[in-house]
Amino acid sequence: MARYKVIDTSPRFLAVDLEKQLLPGTFEHALNYLVDHELDLRRFDARYRNDFTGASAYAPALLLKVVLFAYSRGIVSSREIERACREQVTFIALSGDCAPHFTTFADFVSTLGAEIVPLFKEVLLICDRQGLIGREMFAIDGVKLPSNASKGKSGTRADFSRQADKIEQAAQQMLARHRENDARPIESDLTAKAAQRIERLQRDATQLRRWLKKHPEDRKGAKGKVIKSNRTDNDSAKMATSKGVIQGYTGVAAVDDRHQIIIEAQAHGTGSEQALLMPVVAAATPVCTLDTLITADAGYHSEANLKALAETHRPALIADSQMRQRDERFKDQATHKAQPDPLYDKAHPKKTAGHYRPKDFDYDPHAGICICPAGKKLYQNGANCHHNGQVGTKFQGALRDCLPCTLREKCLRKPETTKTRQVMFFRGKADKTAVNYSEIMRRAIDSERGRQLYGKRFATVEPVFGNIRHNKGLDRFTLRGQTKVDTQWKLFCLVHNIEKLAHHGYAQ
Image (tube, rainbow, N blue to C red; front, side, top):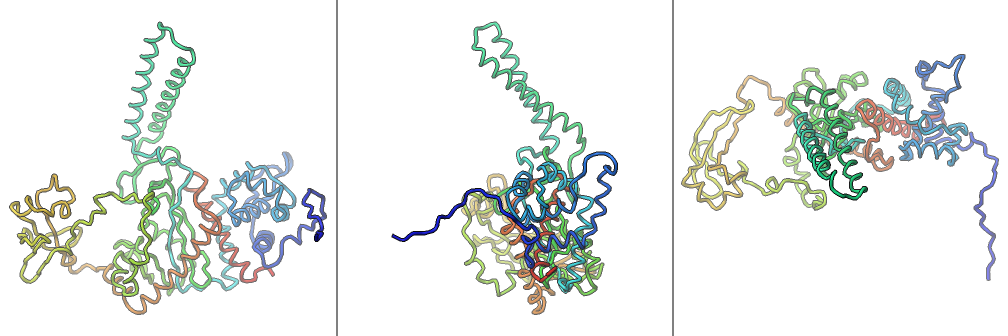
């Protein structure tokens, strides 16, 4: 039989040159050179007061290198980062054979809020110096990710007050039953369990009352409406995603189209993308030129946003919700859509029932006649009705036709309470002198050049989020609070930009 040499994997001492573990052309080599020779870390000196007394601290350069390299490998846990500094040779080389305690890494990331913005800008300047930023088009998009917050602890102050009342009432009832049973023979372990439950209920009620006292006002959204607060992380928000409702943040990024450099990154505790467009545009303005084109998908489309962009003379292409229906290139998109996953399909049954829309009615604007899907004629009860700044003609069905109609379930959302169907056909804006920024944007994006430019947005921004989410494994934010989550999002975006530098020969 053939004989082979023994493969021995037992532990041993090896002479390792740490500097040679950081090979030119790799991410870790570019990161090491960048932190040591390019970034100004003197702003971290204000953190320490150990010039003459106290123990020496770990250098911020060391901590920054290790954290960014860990994020590039999909390692977010501070304990995992500490273990990697003891066991993985690349981490050992970057840390100089140091293994800071995991609390050191956790504190460093959590308190990086004041320093992360200058660091991000310095890396951006280096990318610009290397010719990686073209400033022809910035594509803006966002991703909704869960955070370290309990979705079950969300609600308004009224919800929390009712919960506290119920808990206190349950605790009082249990306490009364407990006192009644004191004179009866009962097993000691059952008595102890009941006492523990009463104590837990009282503690939960006390925590709710304390939270209500600390937050005397309801949280309000961008439009001034009351939105749900969260008792574990009040900066986070409930958001609807394709995988159901999450409690988390929206990470937004503006990406340059030349080499997919992230020029601005922000994390916000809101699922309303419309409210996030202008803050990102304002932050990216110093990097823009007068001709830089801003692109974004339909989630950022609103009349207010388009008006603000027009008033600042910022070229933009913001898609609307009907753009793909008007574009013949997407006529077969339905055939490529995956079937909904029944485990995550959270749609309301009435919303998926396919109720009749105004387009299903036969409307003749010249004759002023409207025929419903059942073939009945509706009567006109308003020729100049105003709704949300739009003017239109309103029709309503007759009781004799709607009540016995067999299509009520498909025509009315609440057939048990609504007697007749009403439908309105809009003719345009009520104020003819007002500028319709949405219509101007539709004409721009439907033009041949507009479609060509907007088509570049997909190839610009989608791979960036794919890299951060899939390659780097960012599937949730592990911190709490808008400042800390924003810091973590910027760190991942920094990793992406440094990867681009390494890929284009930086520090070789």
